[in-house]
Length: 389
Ligand SMILES: NC(=O)c1ccc[n+]([C@@H]2O[C@H](COP(=O)([O-])OP(=O)(O)OC[C@H]3O[C@@H](n4cnc5c(N)ncnc54)[C@H](O)[C@@H]3O)[C@@H](O)[C@H]2O)c1
Ligand SMILES: O=C(O)CC[C@@H](O)C(=O)O
Image (cartoon, rainbow, N blue to C red; front, side, top):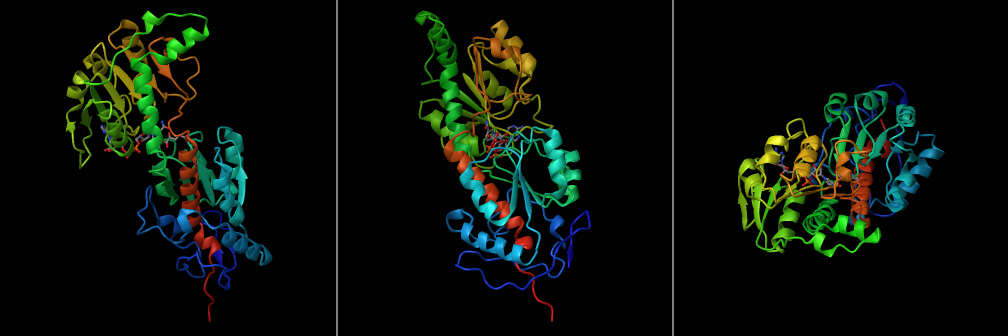
């Protein structure tokens, strides 16, 4: 009989189960009678298909019929059903396969007490950006096998503590790149054409056309900081506006055609639009501070759809007020929600509430990927253990 990873509770007896109905579920080899052995040694944020395919689903979607069958079977035989906490909103369609296999408990992860109360029983936790998965949360969750981030950024997950505790962390790295890139381009246009302030003014009964004259993008220079999945999508779209593309990414091994690599300072000095697409880490926090903003042209615009905290918001406010920077467009903030941030009062700031990934397509992709990876991680609890002779 296996025991729970840290609380010593049993997960249930090893069972020899008949094959499930239908073809699509291929379970991984069982770890033997102790079904937990070694599970906490595994670590991967973005597992390759070669190393992460304990379960296969048609079209990457978990198969509801197979998991419903497994769940019924385990209930009949008194095997505890794995408990999955979903602490940020996911599209209903994406959670359905999980409900078929597991006991899914939906809570509001921003409610700290509810989160801490739910965790001791959890085998898996699925979050978006609203839930802070810090050391306290991870230590409370003594049965936890996997944290799944239905999105890209892992800055709300204490990955070091998770690794130390043997909790697997997975994310959905490709799910929302296009959506974020499309929002980024929208924000670039909104900033150089003053769309948000012009709309506000119109709704207030004004008709100030000459106040909102903008600039064309064609022939100007875009500076992309961080040339990963989103940065590359943004580059293609801004190139379609006939912009020259400069890129700064010290770790990118390949660049695209018509993209010019440069140092950060050179990029800041040359670009008419600077757009950020790098993760927030201890190294990148405050990367764009007063010095960097001073390097930018007074006619330039700064767009941040990456993470708040990469830009020093006080320095940005001062630059925008002083007119040493023409405009900024922000999807992300150092603290979310940003409350009464003075940046929100400035007419040359376009601001939206972290909408980069908020499209139907991105949410479905991220939800399906998170659920698929959670089911794969929970496979030892769902799959049959071998009979011992
Ligand atoms: N607004 C949203 O809703 C939203 C959605 C998805 C992602 N994001 C954010 O966007 C970021 C980028 O996403 P992605 O999918 O392109 O990630 P990615 O990992 O594919 O690309 C990030 C790139 O940043 C580069 N980088 C790291 N440190 C750097 C530095 N100091 N200077 C320049 N480049 C640096 C990396 O080399 C990498 O190429 C994520 O980390 C996340 O925080 C936001
Ligand atoms: O959960 C969200 O909608 C935001 C996701 C986004 O910031 C990400 O990093 O994927």
